[in-house]
Image (cartoon, rainbow, N blue to C red):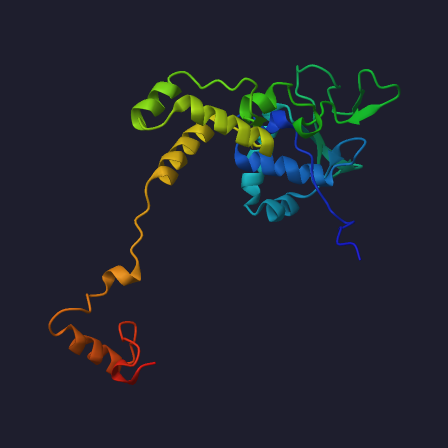
Length: 250
């Protein structure tokens, strides 16, 4: 069974409203108004008590937030009447920035350029539906790449490695490094950093390993009094120095 909720509710808040110099509460009030607004007219008429409950503040704070939005040009406010009786305020949302390019003064719809008959509700598209600039990814995120052919060490890297690891033949290490990662198809964000790690490992693996054999730690079993030590070890169950037939050993 699908876990997708079909009753998902959301509001559209234009980016110019988010980026404007209004309070956080005003942006939230705009979002709640957008939740109640008609999709065609962009008009909503929730009561102040409803807005205060949804935004979780006093109705006087709602009035101040509405005034911010009106001054910004994001909302217009008129009175809804039934004859001579006042009923509530009508809030008309504006999705297109006043004086900005494209769209209509009251939000409405606009034709997408280059798309026959296509419309985009509410003026300017949000950033999430627009294409990012072509250089956005490359400017913000460094991609991992395969090794270059030919592979060239960065400025000063050869001298730095030679100074830190004088025992290494840099040219030999470069050749081995390129052969290994070319065959493996490795990708790195920084090949200079990968080569520095390669050189550290090359030095570490070249260091002689000290092996201490168990036999080297045993005391010699010859000489005056040594056979008594072997007998004592025999009595404790250790027979590594016992001679055949000695102390009953086979």
